[in-house]
Amino acid sequence: MNLARDIIDKQVVDKNQAKMGKVDGVVLALHGGKPPVVSYIEIGGITLARRVGRRTERFIRLLKKRWGSPRAQQPYRVAWRQVRDIGVDIEIALDVRETPVNDWQNWLRDKVIRRIPGS
Amino acid sequence: MDKLLEVSLGIVTSVGGYLEIGSIATSAQAGAAFGFQLLWALVLGTLCIIVLVEMSGRFAAVSHHTISDAMRERFGFNFFLLPLTVTVLLNLMVLSAEIGGVALAGEFATGIGHQWWAVPVGIVVWLLLWKGTFGLIEKGVALLGLVTLVFVVAAVKLGPDWKDLLRSAVPSLPQQDSARYWFLAASILGATISPYLFLFYSSGAIEDHWNESYLWANRAIAGIGMTFGGVISASTLVLAALVMPPSGIRDVNDYHQLPLLLTKVFGFWGLVLFIASLAIACLGAALEIALQQAYLVAQGFGWNWGKDLMPEAAPAFSLVYTLSVIIAVVPMVLGVDPLNLTVFSMALTAASLPLTILPFIFLMNDKRFVKQHTNGRLGNIAIMAIIALGFVLAIATIPLEILSGG
Image (cartoon, rainbow over all chains, first blue to last red; front, side, top):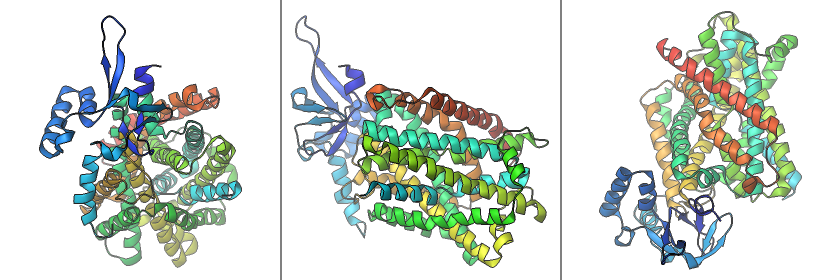
């Protein structure tokens, strides 16, 4: 397996096949002199923005600080052992509703969309 | 569903949804200014879009990825940002032009200026998407879109010189106005090879759960649907060539001249048919582009997406098309000329094609995505040659066109 090719930027789905973003980063752990192992995948705007550039990262962090939910201040990490399947998508053994990944979309739904007549 | 029925529906959708403000405007200008001479650009463009749409369906059926999804995954997000940004901006311009097209139909029908129509048209487009019913009305709009076949009827009725037509399928050098000629060639290529068209098609194939058993159906839909579509565009060019110059029009620079395409042949009913064609064709295209915009962004970031999803199920996806429609309405309200905006954005599209199509060609040759169904060498070379031509022509002539105030 090739991390950059097969993992990074792949679609992530939860255990019910609900789309929950993409793999924005991976966290490697070093143990002694052994080769690094993948311990987490990261999902979230901060990790993604960091890959684009420092300034973009600062900008996204500022946005999150101002409007983001408290638990969305850090990128969301999924332990590698929760990864159930790597196919067309990367399936994890969690329910997206238990994660902060969609907090901002939930906010959008509750505060904006439900207030627009006809929805 | 019975596959044969699905294929027929697919073909109807492609034919009925083919014509839009871009192909009408560029074909009309080319025909009025250069007779049949620019027909070759339409032929090349149509060949290219047939191949691209086939590739797009094959890619989705075999890899179960949409193109945007795969592009991000294969080339990484940072690279993907480039085609994403460019396509999003171009989609906004073209969406604005299509809303302008429906608004023009409103003006032709009532005499009330098109600026006044922009907001109501935007609201209709948004409501149809917001109610989550696009999947249902898509086929309906496409069926109504078959009214655009009236362009073919009119062209045949005028009896063009078929030998002359055939000769124009081969590229030739212009006798005068070279800059205008090559600019129009680029615009025609940009209007025919619409990125939103084949990107949209791959999302549809995923939503309809295509697999490898759909490959022949895909080939039939792409081949027959896009060929018929090309014939409608070609008929528009033929009509313009036969109708405009005798009325003293060599330069179609005023949108009021457009209905002439059909009124010369069918009189009053020609006007009615033109208004209906323009309204339906542009409304269908506006819906597709707004939706494609939302597909592109949602797929790019891994959000939930789907044309039949209610806004509550896909908040971010709905936000993208909502904002897109709002932004696209603005230039029309401010009185930007729909015809100028259209032709200009078609040339820009031609210039942008390598950004979306080259990565796509790479994907079509990657066995990890398309297994043994990779592209043939001929397909690869033909597509790259045609988009290279569009790119060079657009880059070379857009500055001249701006300088001359066209």
